[in-house]
Amino acid sequence: MNFNFSGKKVLITGGSRGIGKACALLFAEHGATVIITYRSNIDEATRTLSELGDRNDHRAFQLDVADADAIEELFAELTSIYCRIDIVVNNAAIFTEHKIAEVDYREWQTRWNDTIAANLTGAANVCYMAGRHMIKKRGGKIVNVSSRGAFRGEPNHPAYGASKAGLNAMSQSMAQYLAPYNITVGVVAPGFVETDMAADVLGGPAGDGIRAQSPLNRVAQPDEVARAVAIFASEGTEYMTGGIIDINGASYLRS
Ligand code: NAP
Image (cartoon, rainbow, N blue to C red):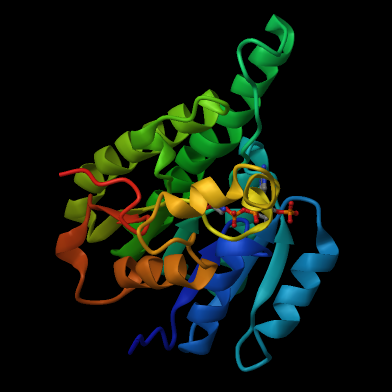
């Protein structure tokens, strides 16, 4: 596809692996300077950074998106290095199982708190920092990575499904609030994607059934999601703000 991100500075949370990495590679290939964050796996982040090449001043930073202060510190550092951030992709998230019949009450609460802190409050805090920065710079683009689970239910991962439904609602509120400042907010909602996050489920006894949910009889590849992210991040797609793009191979249709 014919993307052009020359001169753009792009921040991707969780950009070291999976979908975030595919986004990083796409943006770098089309001329952007890419900043990836990772939570703890520095080896993977270093490998991804080297794959981005040395054409631009790409960098990697450690960040736990559940840590509000760390997000503020990262934006302070980034704006001192780069002057402006044009595109922010809220991609980092966790996906942990907590079946009501199998976990005790304490674990249930821990899973809910951790998931909401990373997937929803963390993304909202990144939106706050990005929004404040972009208001000053008179424009920008935010893309949030949600999930089919927001619509279809996540019986074994209920906090995850709720976090992504909340992310959709938060993104749409932000799209309305930030539009007068020339800032757009888009959402992509993938079904299963072949990444580490889904590896156990896709490699287990449920894998074939999951692939068969799509009439294409497969799950998505990370670069298929990255292309949808890039559409929201491109010049000329501003009127899509507030939209949610499904990327689920017709495995779950809604109208
Ligand atoms: P992944 O392969 O597990 O990679 C997760 C990335 O996020 C890594 O870079 C990881 O860093 C980082 N990360 C995890 N927790 C973090 C935290 N608390 N703070 C900062 N960074 C953190 O995930 P993925 O499958 O690419 O998923 C990316 C996005 O797509 C997520 O929002 C996910 O919900 C969504 N999604 C995925 C699927 C799927 O089937 N894979 C389906 C629908 C939606 P480390 O490497 O340091 O751990």
